Amino acid sequence: MAGAGERALRLAGPEDRVDLTAFLTRAVRLDAAAVVRIRRRGDGLLGVWTQTGFEVLAGRVVRGTIAPADTCVAAESLRAALVAAPAGPVDPGWSMDSAWRGALPPEEGYVHVDDIPAKVLVDLAQRGVALAREHGAQGPPASLLAQEVLEVSGADTTVGIPMRMVFALGAMGFVPGIGRDAASSAAIDPAEVVRVRASATWTRLDARFGSVHLRRSGGLGLDVLR
Image (cartoon, rainbow, N blue to C red):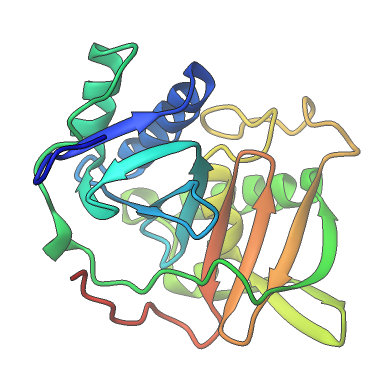
């Protein structure tokens, strides 16, 4: 058990360490100054979150404990600590709670809208990347990120999937077979799907290696850590 005031992350097994390290590596690749928020969930697992830069939150669940139970740290510092200590607890690093202003999505309250073949989303991401490259170093324009590329209906709910969610899903490597730049969708199993879920305020895409979330009202709400 962590002592009073002790900051410590303990992961349940080596696979959790591998999963978290991969998540952090992707987060840092998107933003060298990325911050991650780690919070104990109601089911005892750890939810790990990062802001992708597309106004989309990316999350992954791992087994373990964290003290404090809700904390923010620099993604690169935590990644380096995990690499340096291949087993045992690690110090998650300096608190960066003040750097996190976005509300986290709820753990429950979603309806399953439908499933989309993962290959469809990766193909869309590739086409979006090709369009974004036409704009050079400025990156994808806001109009491209906001464009809804799919409309999904089910369970008496209809949600639009904007390109920003597709980009975030690919950039975080949540679909098996996606390379660093998602250069090809040929390696993706045709049976691999991405599950679309929605609540009153969030749209969520669940892939095998993680999820991306977007507020349906647009933007991120304020939720300052205590």
